[in-house]
Amino acid sequence: MKKIVGLLVIALLIFFVVAQPDGAANSLQNILGMLRDVAVNVTRFVTHLV
Image 1 (tube, helix red, strand yellow):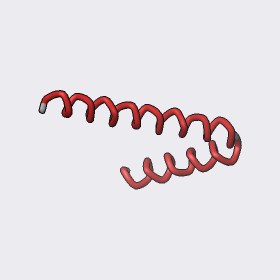
Image 2 (cartoon, helix red, strand yellow):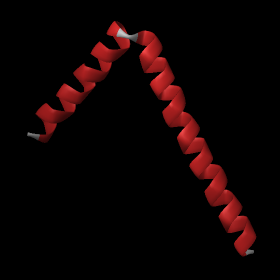
Image 3 (cartoon, one colour):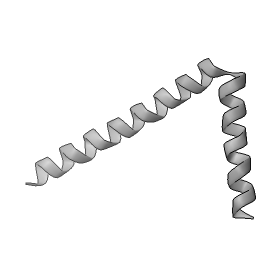
Image 4 (cartoon, helix red, strand yellow):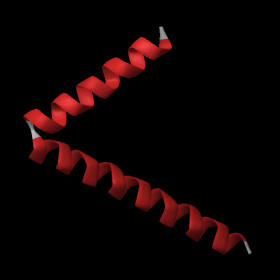
């Protein structure tokens, strides 16, 4: 079951990239931006602990 769900998620992602490349790129940029902000905030927190 996990394998089928994983394949469906991958197929959906590929479809999204092919059907709406601009939207997919914007979504990826937003996700990467959020991850960067989290990393910066965690680093700042740990730095202030020391």
